[in-house]
Length: 326
Ligand SMILES: NC(=O)c1ccc[n+]([C@@H]2O[C@H](COP(=O)([O-])OP(=O)(O)OC[C@H]3O[C@@H](n4cnc5c(N)ncnc54)[C@H](OP(=O)(O)O)[C@@H]3O)[C@@H](O)[C@H]2O)c1
Image (cartoon, rainbow, N blue to C red):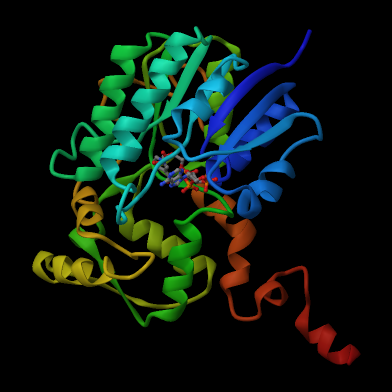
């Protein structure tokens, strides 16, 4: 039997890399669309065996170019998302609403077997966030246009190549005090990237028809608990200081001016809402794929690079005996 062909948008990112490995190992061919093959081609190509990965460069709104790819695809997966808006076309509306709608229409036109779209947890609740509103409108448009769609809504996704645990460890390393927004009480259920890609593969291979699945890790952690775990893993003591809302807003206004914002006003609004299952939709456990990987255990595997001494701070290297040798 020929391997099935899966068309992936956003495959060069954190989830994309794990997903390409999972799918190609399981005999599924992937065609990955990227904005820039010079920058991302090598990363994408080295995630699976030769012959299983095809890389295409395209602007995601070049409909003529992307339409051609649908004629050869069995499945489509959309992983494209942004955390903050930039000038010109990079708006939440374009990326989270208009683009996924185009994909859903093409899935219908070429009668694909399934469309899997990665959205985000908590978007029904975060009614004042532009990010959440754009994701929700995107979901609604997709479901209106293509019935063979499954939408996955993950809580925060972590791995050694995330922008979450790694970025926080960098900041915690450098800053003597660290702000706690909403007193650090917001709850999350961090899910490891490989647990999430197991869910995507399960949905594809078992023809799961559930429309919306909330994807969460095995434990509930508050923002403060997450920071405390990271601090203990990098062996640092820092003051975690609750920021009153007006000061938090002011800091977000300043941070969002940076080229890669640490926090935007919109993200601050999102942080107000717990990022846990709503109870209205099935979770990954309910479709038979519970998450297995715990935050502390997994981050421990790479956090030593943020400790003083880096790899020499691990039990594996006995610095005393190294010193004696020299
Ligand atoms: N990471 C999380 O904690 C988390 C939590 C909930 C939901 N999600 C959702 O899951 C999806 C994947 O997340 P991720 O962490 O893998 O994201 P990521 O690492 O930021 O990767 C996203 C990919 O999207 C493409 N992309 C970004 N901006 C684009 C633009 N303006 N135009 C076209 N393509 C663009 C990029 O591909 P190229 O550069 O190759 O074009 C990039 O590799 C997103 O929709 C995100 O909202 C993530």
